[in-house]
Length: 109
Image (cartoon, rainbow, N blue to C red; front, side):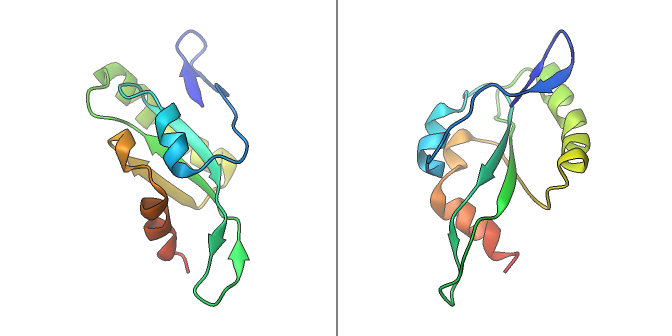
């Protein structure tokens, strides 16, 4: 999702089905912030499978300061509206990997 500059509203920019974190990384703009809502197939240590819904805020270095401020200011409201509890931030699009996401989710289990 991105913020429409004119309306200042968060809008759905693109939607993907069956995409890995590594492939999703390639879809992110390298110099523009984005909000991602991602359902991940997480296999627990005891073999159980869950599908946690995660919000990932991509705010790469090199973004325009006004963009960073606009997205950072909207992040808390978006988290509140979506009622998501698994909220993560990346500062470089290359951070978004399956290993990174697994490490983030380990905290919750």
